[in-house]
Image 1 (cartoon, helix red, strand yellow):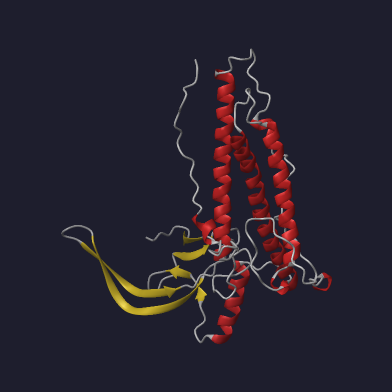
Image 2 (cartoon, helix red, strand yellow):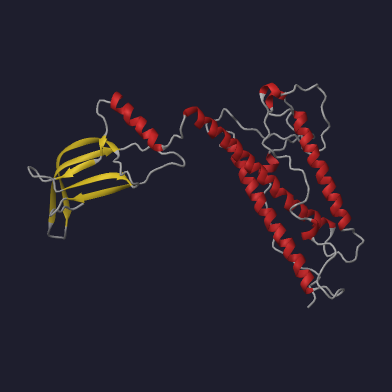
Length: 336
């Protein structure tokens, strides 16, 4: 069954709004991406709004490239298996899978490179010519971990290796060849959808590397990894020294006046340690709580009422779950 001459496919869309916002409107097309270190939300080079937006875009770009790559591969295989009247066997001389393979030798300039302060060489004032479309921000060398010339060299190498790969694709898919299933533009798109995820992965790995390096340095300086339990212990210690009324464990006996306890109610952690939370407690005067059982019966509960306040400290990745626990003594019972 021959394929139709024309077929409309659903568009595979990707928003480029964030990317376009990072490019200056001047003719030089300078990149204006920067991390605002003065903002309160900026915690680390990885944990800030600007970097998070870049990571989100990288994830979306990877997903778009994957969708386009799968679409192109399926389209080529569909044509090979359904419509190849010139040859007995469904095969092509040049296919996208062979030409635009993931192992294409294209230099990846996204690397977590750093230099020691004494190893940094001062620039001689000679600016290297840019081969990339975008330019770096014009700034002194102190504003970069690497000098602008070194970064330009990395970007130029990426441009050269990309140009060589595109030239290879153009040679593999000549426009005058009659047995080509796909055109050179489609092969170029397939090559880019293979290479762009590599750039995104290196960027994500680089940011994770920097974050992990800073965490290891901080852990080495402190001597341990601070958790929510450590902060809770710290707060309890200083509460005992600074507050007149120290928070007490939420563990209260259940009893009737002038009787022995019939049980215990507490709020404690769900782990194996079963630690009770510490609360500020205020005793309210004796009051009566009325509970209507039906239209003719009202149950009155008398006794003291307690108002508890609890300040829970929780880290982003370290937090405990708590539960209300009621325990009754042998041959005793109460309503919770």
